Image 1 (cartoon, helix red, strand yellow):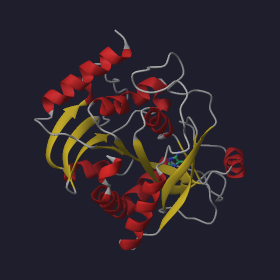
Image 2: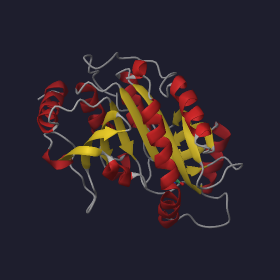
Image 3: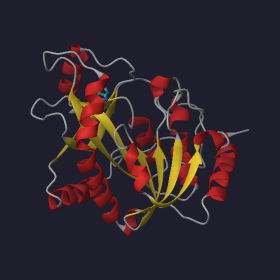
Length: 278
Ligand code: HPA
């Protein structure tokens, strides 16, 4: 079965569970933001493992489900749990849900994640609007035969993170008195955190944050000409900046500390997401 046939079957199954809801924004909740899905009104909930052709979760106890419903006056389709490259999925598997979203008629994508802070003027707990990314690793979700029905073989990435949406998000943050940064996100495969030398290299290369997600999704979304924006919660100073080892607990703790602010900002952006970017 080819990709388009698989996508059609996934789409048909999801549609049959949506009860007529027509989601317009795809929302990917990164570490720490998962709870936001619980605030979605009148939700339709679909487990990933029930969706034909969806990647199968390898992580025990991992919450993997779509939650569709109302958020700030918009119908959203939310991924509670995403697929990471470091879990062993191919890049194509990682972006499969984004393609299903597009098949469902969604043209707007909101990506969130937790990331390490490379910019030494910033601090853990800061939120960063992603203006661009660096993908140093060779793999790419569009490597291989091009699914022409989804997009062109060669495609622009200069608007991968919609500039108007960055401006809109900046204004929303200002109105809520939330301080936000703007910067460049650099993808590392993980699951090892970066070395101190890799973080120095990332900074020299122009990165403000490092992380293990988001980039494949943004590439697939650009291929399909979706309007995309991303926010990183900078949960920790990246390796080697402070004189202490990195640990996952710090990532979770900071995520917990800022999740109220982070979700307030996400909601405000959803509320203001303009008609012409849907
Ligand atoms: N590196 C990579 N990914 C991350 C980090 C980090 O320091 N913190 C949270 N996600």
